[in-house]
Length: 377
Image 1: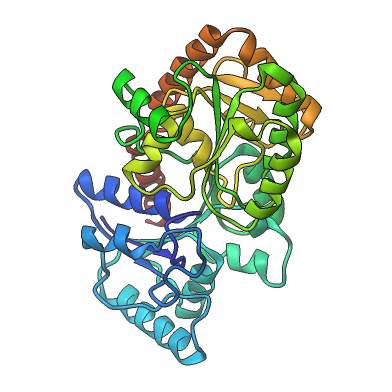
Image 2: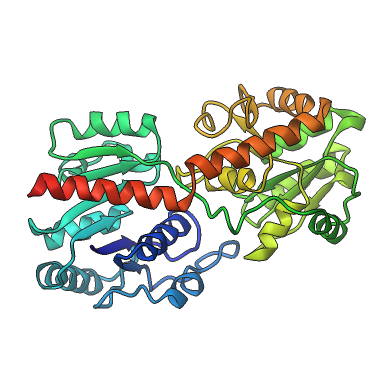
């Protein structure tokens, strides 16, 4: 098949890592795959990487260039629509896979010919809100993909009788890049972050506002001398307020801010931790931060119901609310038996390998394409 992915995002975060990984996995099994992304904005904040250095080396550029940006001028948007229309009609594209609302609107403007199967992945809950022409737009594609059963149910209610099939295909993670750390890597990471080798450590990745960081600090502080070390990875708008909470917590000596870690440095950040904490999926429903930690063999202390798709008592420590008291209960259970925590981390890695590998996502997605193409015929 010739597959064209449109993902109008310029950062290597949100839907982009998963979309790039899916495109590469599809190409690895013999398909011709293209990926167009936002080439206008680049890194538009100070705490996330631009997508270009990650995407460009793989030579996934489509036969024609797209701006594909939510900040496109009227002329750039109309030019993208015209180029997409010509490519779909004359470029021998079999599957058009859309990832964001901007892409979906552009495809509706260009028109998807009958011989091209249009597919949309809904990466975030905000795309499920009832908006003007939303139901019509979702009906312009043959297939819709969600990351969870809850999103699938909401999508079916939104689409109603529109002629689209809905598939639940959970997000995946690169299990070769994210692996459990060996003893030497753990020792090196602990030394780099000035953390005692025998101290229990909880990591939290991303310092975006309202992700439960302040509640985590207060929960750890309530444990007194049992408080674990906290390793905050990332930069963001929540950092200044979080530092003030840390300063007032009484456990500032056990808290580390290590900044934004890229590439292998992020894997080394996970190497310093014994567990991870998450309060919500983030801006992409694939829950990449949770999957990264689990692929590294870490149990996740996760708030329900937000994390219920990936965290249960077999692979982590589900907590019932995003409050310091509930989070402290989960941390305390983990601290009561660090050996049990390691067993749950091993189980988390095994589950990710079985259910959340990139190869599996590619296989299931390609099967969905085939099903939709057969229906079209």
